[in-house]
Image (tube, rainbow, N blue to C red; front, side, top):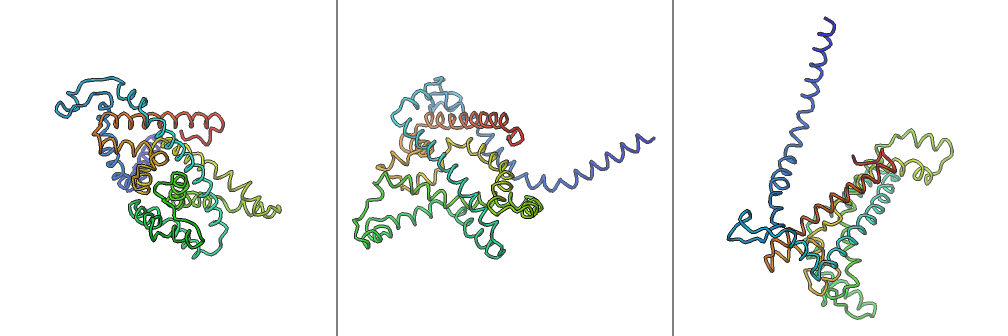
Length: 314
C-alpha cells in the first residue's frame, strides 16, 4: 500500500514538473525547427563534394569523382592563403576578443552606478546588431581617397593621402578592430552575467581578511570565470575555419589588391560560386570546414577533460 502511494506521488510530481517546463519547450521549438530546416535537411547535399556535378544530370545523377575535388582545392594556388588568413584571423579574434571582453566585464563589475552600467551595456552591445553592409558604407566614407575622414586627418598633420583599399599592411589591423568593436558587447554581457552569479559572500570574506580589489579579481573572479572561458573557447575553436563573411567581404569592398590579407575560405567559396559556378569545389571547402571544426572541438575538449574534467564541454 505504501509503495502504491509513493508511486502515485512520484508520478504526480513528474507530471507537475513536465507541465511547468512545457512553456520552455515551446520557447525552444523555433530554434529546433530552424536547425532542422537550415542545418540538417540540407546535409544530403554533402555528396556534391564527392561528385563531378552536372546541372543536367542533377545531384544524384552526376558521376562520382571521389576526393578529386578536395585534391583540386588543396593543390590550388589560393589554398595556403585562404587557410592561413582564416586561421590567423580567427585565432586573433578569439584571443583578443576574450581578453577585451573579460576586462570590460570586470570594469562594469567595479562600477557602482546602475544607470551608467545600463548605458555602457547598451552602447557596447548596439554594434552587434548593425549589419556589416552599413559598417562597410561608413568605412568607405572614412577611407575614401578624396574627402575621406582618415586622409583629411593625415593631410591636416602634414602627411600624404593613403590608398587604403590597396594598402595590405593596414587591413589586418582594421579587420581586427572592426570585429572587436562589433563582438565585444555580446561577449562582455556573457562574462558580466557570470560575474554577477558569483556569491557575494566570497568577496565579503576576502575583504575581511584584508584582500585588495586586485586580489579579489585574481583569486576569486577569474578562477570562477574559468568554466565559462573554457566552454566559450572550445566552441570558438570549432568555428576557427569559418570566417565572418560580411566582415571579410563587405568591409574591404571585395578589392582584388587586398585578397592576400582579406581573402578567407568563406569569401573564396562565394567567389567560386559567383564567378566560375564551381559548386563542387565550394562544397568540398565547406565540407572541410565542418569536419575540421568537429575534430578540433573533440581534441580541445579531450585535452580539457584530461587537464580539468570539471571544465570540459562534455
